[in-house]
Image (cartoon, rainbow, N blue to C red; front, side):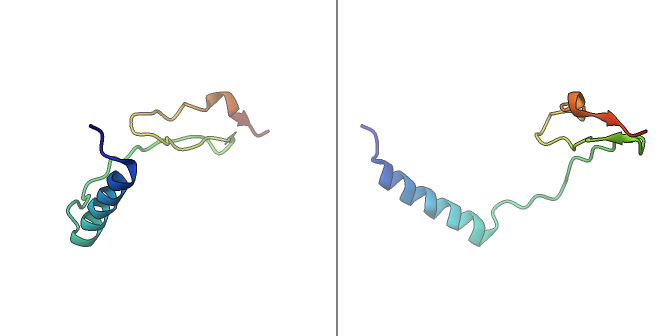
Length: 65
């Protein structure tokens, strides 16, 4: 039998409260991606998703004259 959605949300709220109140997870390390582009290149956006690369929006790049 599936637990009703309201009860699941209540338990989820308790879990989130516990995690934020007790600091059960604290990130200490960050992945850094250094990227060098020329100042003439426009519309270069940062990687937004873990594992994505810098060129995901290369079709939008443009050169300033």
